[in-house]
Length: 281
Image (cartoon, rainbow, N blue to C red):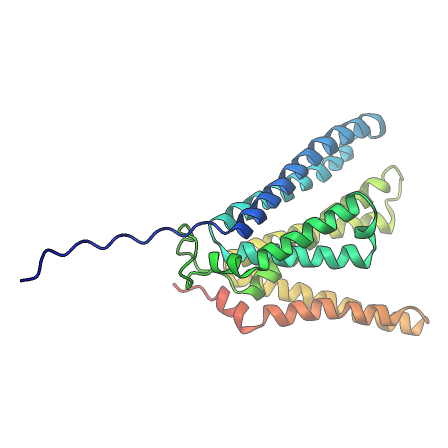
């Protein structure tokens, strides 16, 4: 006669890998640095507005500290999601760190002694820690050592993560440079082409922001709207290449830039993006 069965002991929760702890700590340090930068920028902007601008346009100068604050909030959100095991957050860190390293090294800004080298080392460390197998297992539902707080929500494929990260980065830069252009050209009776171009840039950034929200929420109109705008950008660049060729201008540069919207069109029309936006019901 068999004795009473002893209940099986519950499996021990996996410990957070050191690489994940390191990534999260670095992300929160970046968020804190961005909050400090937001405060400094707000103070300096307030002083500049009080001494330079005397109309409502000066309020646009506060877009810069608001953008710093938005990036700080996004960094904190990613840190929380990496801690809870969301793979899209880990992939976002890998992608952003890789892009920042390439830009820093290509422009040589990351080789300057002081903040340049410190930033390069920070992003390099983030890239390595986030790409380690331990971090990958922590964010993989199929792994036995995944995060116990990983949740059941569907993870977007890497292609969609890359699209959203790059599209949101383009929105931030467009708003920043558009507002700077508007403020730089303030004061003339005729706003000129530069001011109108800046207004168009800001407007397109707002439209892209709305489309990005739709794409994030798996709406097909967000994907198709972005495809339409990318096609318009591509046609405009082709027209610029033709005009530059006729006028002996830098037509090769326009053709090379055509690869950017072409890559986005390909990615957004890819099966992974279509499946992500194919909502049931």
